[in-house]
Image 1 (tube, one colour):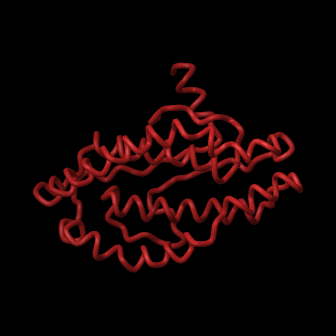
Image 2 (cartoon, rainbow, N blue to C red):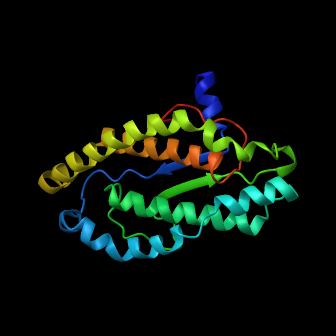
Image 3 (tube, one colour):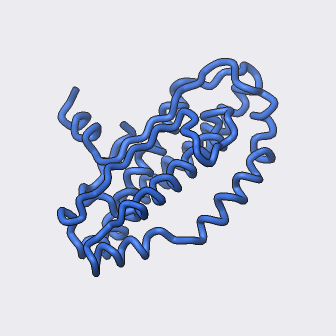
Length: 194
């Protein structure tokens, strides 16, 4: 294992989505957007409640990150990733509000005394290079999801390479989210899909 790979496995945010290659449900794949509407309505109700500002204020003025607030943020992220995994055809299971469903997201609880209390004011700016790269990778992911949609419809299987790429983009996005918005680490995210 290279030093870079070791540092990424030690990064305080880890994501994996189980690979389901064959035996995919062609019917739910065909109607995926329509079947996702109810769960998208649920998640959109929560997206209006921001998690960044309260976290920033707690760290800046009180140098605290209450465990209950951290747990809420992590469960919200897990739920969001399950929805994205369903929409991006990584799974056929309808997103559960409380079950893992093959999505493993771990974010280490921060020792706030070790976090720079003023860095949360600037982390979102420092992450701009990641936003640019992730926008490009996200566009590629959308194209690959459309390709995978046709492959599943015709063969009933999901290509492993496409799965790994989409999971890698999600992993990278989660690391940037943990750094810039959940404010759980001061360690700058690596530019890597691993």
